[in-house]
Image 1 (tube, helix red, strand yellow):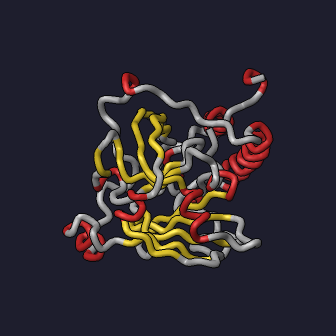
Image 2: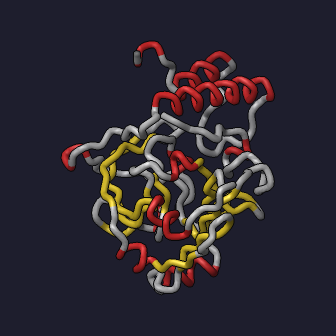
Amino acid sequence: MSGLILSRRGLVASAAAGLGGLLAGCDQASRSPQVLNILQSAEGLSYRTQRLLQSGQPLAREFSHSDLSPIFKVNGTEHPGGDAYKALLDTQFANWRLAVTGLVPRPLSLSLAQLRAMPGRTQITRHDCVEGWSAIGQWSGVPLSQVLRLSGLAANARFIVFHCADELAAGSLYYESIDLVDAFHPQTILAYDLNGAPLEVGHGAPLRLRVERQLGYKQAKYVMSIEAVDRLDNIQGGKGGFWEDRGYEWYAGI
């Protein structure tokens, strides 16, 4: 069956090749309406197909320690900057709190120590970047599902939004979002360690999202808060993520 199904990467590559190869990298901020229409059509097909095939929540491939990449490149922001983040970094995030808000009956404010004390998960997976490179790393963190079960979700909650510390454009803090299927997937974790050590700044300290069945730009770094919402069109550019607001696909399944 796998030979009959086009992957998201294949769909994007075909569209980009046919129209001049416009999908160049993570800092690509504009595309023609013609290309956007093709990509959005491919995204809808990819999303519906993968949701059908992934009923029962199959796992992304996991690897062994011998497969770990010698170098794990930094994707996106290397350092958020700003006084607020610097103050958190200076105290090794002792005063950092993860806020869980929105359509939740029990809003939360969790310290890094509290997250580390929760039952965790470690997984060795491959990170695939839209720029074309990949790397295998060992991620440890708390399953997002555990946090959401603590807070609860209102009946009308449909998406989980991740608000981050890095500002890639003036007045636009990085953000991402996933649906509840991915939010409750066992490999979707809030990671605090990479390769057995606390996250370095370049890799998203103190906390980053790992949603292993999607491309690298969905793995939001420097997560400051999580918000449960019923819609995405009223957040920043309305497309569900920083890069999505600039033309990338919201569902980046691989």
